[in-house]
Length: 285
Image 1 (cartoon, rainbow, N blue to C red):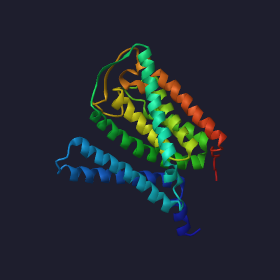
Image 2 (cartoon, helix red, strand yellow):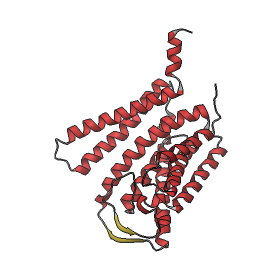
Image 3 (cartoon, helix red, strand yellow):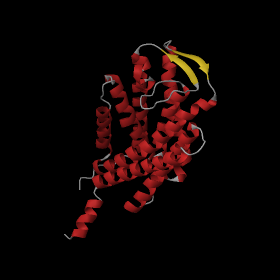
């Protein structure tokens, strides 16, 4: 076997693709953020406007970087970010995230632990919208577009799902974590979001589910989202009660109702995906 053949095999090995894909997209996003902040700091724009420009730039460069890289790398059309599948999947994803977050709050309200102190101007939604935009697009392109997709192609759907659940459980074991919060995060990020990708076979559904999720919890309902530092919300609210229902210091997304509802949603996604024959078998060659 000549050196060129060895190099070709090495470049197209699935782990190499994962490393190259993640490194390239992270580097592009970091570069855009650096250039954006460097140039925008010299303007008289408000902080919200600057952050919005950077967030949109992050989302666009992550998408373009992914499309261009894997179009060349894998010599194929990038169907998972096709414009033709955008509308339906973006709407379903956004409404699913908003619906789930609303249900979490409704359970807390029925238990007597949620009250609205005041309603703020629409402009208070901007910080959460900005943060959620970056999180939804960049995170899901990296995690599902690169890592999950390439692992699934090699290991199959079931093994990759189990790997993701375990991965997110391990990554979220920290000082402030509880057994419930670790389980919920593993189900949300490691099971439900990948299941939405398996069902749709595109990235729009999980991207907008993640975006809506991160936008609604702190931005609309005033709940804590441990991954986002948001101090403004449409509803200034008071959340009290047992941590089992409220999520405690980790917010409603880490409550018991969240665990149950996200598990049910993920199972529904997988059931529909199974009917569509969307599961992939392992490729051990």
